[in-house]
Image 1 (spheres, rainbow, N blue to C red):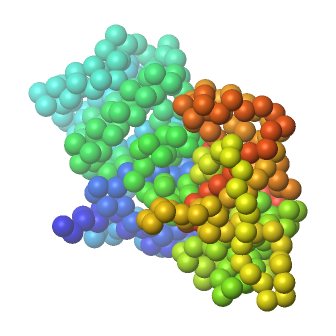
Image 2: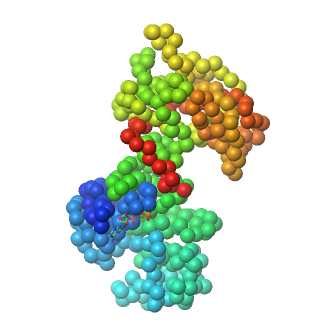
Image 3: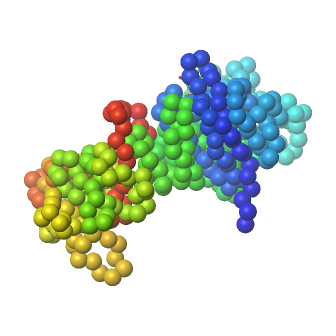
Length: 401
Ligand SMILES: Nc1ncnc2c1ncn2[C@@H]1O[C@H](COP(=O)(O)OP(=O)(O)OP(=O)(O)O)[C@@H](O)[C@H]1O
């Protein structure tokens, strides 16, 4: 079935003070839940405001259902918009704030609007505060009122700017369920800015990573999670293992040679191989949860080099694989630190390079590991992912939560 294209953003650029959004292009289909992530000040709110018509676009075009709405006034766009800081009218009660859009259209007293208000008041648990004024609300209450206002007129497209950031974990989980329901069952497309990685993974069907007003990477959240396209994306998306080294060519295949331990990992998967330049300084980027930790030690082996034994290698041939089993590479390491994290245990291991491994609690219980022990680490060859090394180190302090 052909997917319905709702929003088509082509080369959108604008300037706000010293900041600029630079030629952003992306599409939103009716069945999309697009999450936008990026460090603070990367332009996420400005982008939502441009889509809503609240700031002027300097170049590029925005099409909504094939209509050019680039210069259309905000009230004609019919998008629901829940702001990060709620922006509720202080002189109006919560009820009047929620009904504001309907009142502008002369529909505040319409039976279907009243029904919708009652429904939203119930699911958002704001019934008891409908007659209060915004200054007497908590941050979480304000966010829920803001969501109710955005949802009242059942817009085809919802723009959400960190709508759940001030909520406690339980309320947040409830509202995430509500947003999923609105998206899946009411057929509402959503564009949702968030700093919360778990939220982005849970809700998003697509993801945009913005940095300094530019589109850095787009794809499904799972793609960005497993295969960030740059050192910046890997650090921002909190890939735990970013190991320096370079691409080596051996046995007609690409391998990753680490700088410190001089181990070869591979052969690297074909996917992405065209971007992996042999000899180029790069990083092996692997999630801690993609590495398997076991007690039994295996023997390392690897590609035969014409010039005799090369650096120690960890290859797909070790350990021996049954037919149909995913190819793995493995290497020995020493446990240096063990940290309990609730549902998993983070184990720091040294093998020339430092590796972080996340071991699920159920597996951990049978391991009985101590600091100083030698273990065997392994990952699927298909999970070996290489990112180019940027000119300068990027701070990790502003990544996702
Ligand atoms: N009206 C304005 N005039 C001048 N500069 C602005 C204006 N609006 C936004 N900016 C600047 O544009 C940059 C991007 O702001 P924006 O609010 O879009 O970032 P953000 O990615 O949403 O950040 P956060 O995650 O902190 O909410 C910031 O440096 C901000 O100070």
